[in-house]
Amino acid sequence: MSVLIEGNYLGNKRARLVHGPSGAELLVDAPRDNAGQGAFFSPTDLLGAAWGACAMIILGILAEPSGIDLSGMSMRVEKEMRSEPRRIGALSLELHLPARLPEEQRKKLEAAARACPVGLSLHPEIALELRFVYDV
Image (cartoon, rainbow, N blue to C red):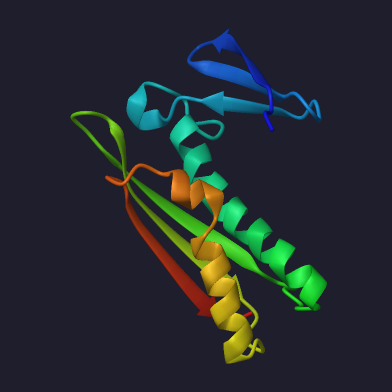
């Protein structure tokens, strides 16, 4: 299955992206540390956000038919850039999940999050850290 995403350069180091199937739009900006204004997500920010969003959605897909309540689940991603060449050097993803989940469900959910397609697609030179915090 393919998905078409189109984009237009808006000038001033910004672009508008359009998701073909839905028509949803997203503005992207160069970050402040790379000659931009940092007013919107940068392309590398989107990569980190995609990993966190993917992990949460994968958990939702697993949880729903099993009746697992993930109310309050959230995530936090921290991105570290490298130079020479400029690229993402590290991503740290923290998933906050309900404290009430029993150990058996936790193990299933953690395995599913580790199998997130975005995480599996990231370059092996990006240092990835995935933490599960049961505090919701």
